[in-house]
Length: 355
Image 1 (cartoon, rainbow, N blue to C red):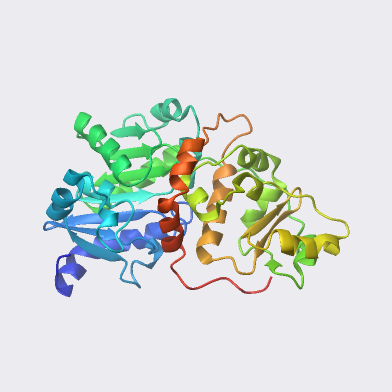
Image 2 (image 1 turned 90 degrees about the vertical axis):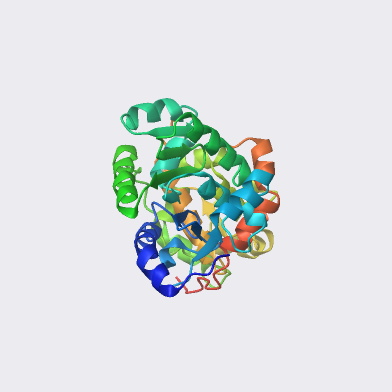
């Protein structure tokens, strides 16, 4: 790492810090510690540390400085992932180091993801992003694999400043924060999808079923759409949509995790059985009723669940969805997913307030 005095950091990094915080506070752009941003200043790559939240850019020390030439020579040229070498470095450090742009933002924009998980995404985006210098990157694992694809793409079209990552998200590049913010606003406008209006949740029944238990109602009322919207349930039942969802919530029962379970009558009838069977789950979906969450659900898990609900509400009932393959799921279910879960849940603050 490279030492820099606070004056240089404050003066030169302020635009990066300001925009990072604004982007991080928008749940339609980032959820939990997903997303990252960077700036290349005087040979130093300032990049958001893994596990840090973009929303905390102005109140926490979320950026780490890396010698850019060293990252390229000792890591990229040696086919070594920088996140394996530099403690705390973002899992996407290779991506940021590969791109030649002075500033780079990678976000998990829910509207973008709703397009990026479609099998016809490239065709649809050609129409929606016409006139922009953009490229489509089919799904590939994070880290070195993604950086190599980006390197090939930028070599073919050096003027590219926008990348849509299949089943993943959005990368916006530019010379400064103002350029990136303008381009990001344009892309959001072009890719905006109005969410469906799900049916109302059964708040009274859900409260009754979770009363005096290890469960409670979610803080974000929008999460109930996973239980009240039949289209959302059908989409989730089909498979895994994108990696960060898999990394936070998955285990060997991925399909079961997102499957709605019957609502008992009377509500408390199966409560003891649920607590034994589902005690390790972060949430339960009840068909036609809504969602309850564990009282121990982490802040990161809550944010990711909210983001997932927003994505599926923007996918139509006839949308051709491209789910992650078994091989891709296996790839993100190993050490990368373990590191992601560990870092994404790094914040010790957990939601424990009662409904």
